[in-house]
Each structure stands twice: as C-alpha cells, then as structure tokens.
Length: 127
Length: 127
DNA sequence: CAGATCATTAACCATATCGTTAAGTATAAG
DNA sequence: CTTATACTTAACGATATGGTTAATGATCTG
Image (tube, rainbow over all chains, first blue to last red; front, side):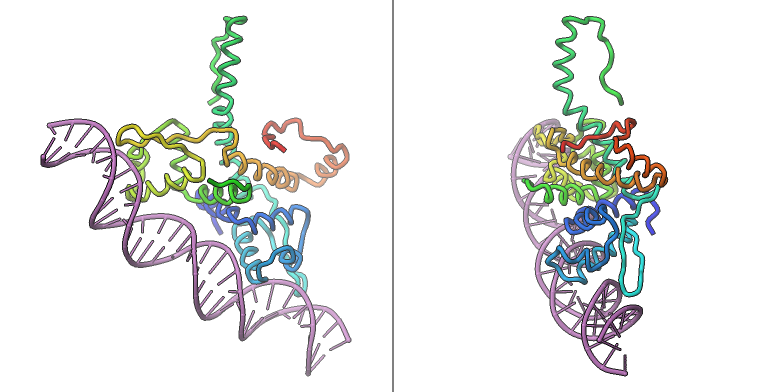
C-alpha cells in the first residue's frame, strides 16, 4: 500500500496515463462490472486487462469482489481515494492556469474600469 | 505536438507521474526560472533535469525562452493547456467520488432534486 | 466426473523511462 | 583567443511497462 503523498501521486498519475485504464474507469463509473464485461470492448487479451485491473486496484482506484469464479470491480469511492489527491494537486494549478489565462481580460477590464472607476486599487491576485 | 484528447491525457498524466517534474512545476508556479535554478534543489545530474524539462515542454506544460546561453522556463498558461484536459477529466470523477462518499440519504436527495451542489465552485468543464 | 468458463500467473519480448558519464554546442567573459 | 558557463545530445545501463501465448486455478454445469 502506498502511503506517502508524493508516492500516491506518482501511482495515481501513472495509473491514469494509460487510455485502456481510463476507459475501464469510465466504464466502472456506470456501475460494477465483471472482468469479462470490462475486457469485452477491447481488442487486447484478457491477461492484459487483468494486469490493468491489478494496476488500478493497487493504486486504490478500484475495488475487487469475488463471487464464485467471477471477479466484480467497482470504483473505490472513499474519503482518502488517491483520486482526491490528484484532483487537489491539479486544482492548485488550475487556479494558476486560469489566472494566467484571464490576465489579459482582467487587465483590459481593469484598464477600462479605471476610466469610470478610479477608486479601483485592489489586487486581483488571490494567492 | 499532441493533438488527440486521449493522447494529450496520456502525455500530461505521465508527465505528472514523476515527483521531480511535479516539483519543477511547483517551482515554476512561483515564476520563471533558468535551467540552473531548476536543477539546483535536486541531487540528480543536470542532463537528467534537462530531460525532465524536455518532457514537460513536449507535454505543452512549460515554455522555453532562450536568452543568450540561458534557457528560461515558465508554466505554459493558455486556454488549451493539457492541464485543463487533465483537470476536466479528474473533475468528472471527483464528483462521482464525492457522491459515493456522501451518505446514502445525500445520494437519495441528490437523485430527488437532481440539482447541482450550489457550493461547487470548481466546475471547469467546458462541455 | 468431465468439460466449459472466468480469471490469474508465468515466461517472454519490445519499447519506454530515468538515471548516469562523456562529449558537444553556443554564448559570455577575461 | 582561451577559458568558463549554461545547457543539450549521445551512449549506455537498469528497471518498468504493456503486450503476447501458454499454463494453471477455481468454480460452475451437464
């Protein structure tokens, strides 16, 4: 099990860096599915899917339940899902990215406001 | 240059799956820095840093500006940054994860009034 | 029991990744 | 011109990743 935040981020980002694994997660967002269900849409072999499922499971992104010979998989939704760590990490940068993206707009808006509203001395940056 | 969404997600998630690269991005969030600046905090060799910078650059996460012999790097903040794709992808799942984490009655309530959480200020999805 | 089904593990291969050291390129400074 | 500085490229090695086929395990079904 992965405990350190940086290790968790490594693990979750690399788990998400594969299109087959992202597809599997998308499928699981619609509900629990068996290994066969999950393998069906792909042209790769069943063992390859099995390995992807293992990667997702070890990243704590999915959970496995065995019922007879069938393995059922579902998204691991819990308060310390590594997905939250990833989302939090990205969110931090999203704010930066949007601030940068908005800066020209904001500048132009501030410049035009200044003509009508000279009282604007506030700092735009939130961080 | 990476164009397909799935390829962009592959590229950005794998770029983010390395702690050194995430550290570099964190450093660059504070402002532009030279290669030397960026290499300084790490115990790895300068060529190793150079490679990480190339990976981030090719993922369109950073931009390079050459001034004499010095290379200056900054975060690539633009409307179609792949970081946005990554954030949007995760955001979709974050909602699912939080919905699952919330209690059953919250789920039932959400199902009955079928409205968005007014507290949710992080909707960045363009779709 | 015998065979079919669901899935994993083993063994292998090709390619990618992350690091190294050594050499090369380009620019600045003495 | 010579040397120092900033950085990249080349060549290499160890390990990881993503796929394959073949074999194995475990459970259901006739």
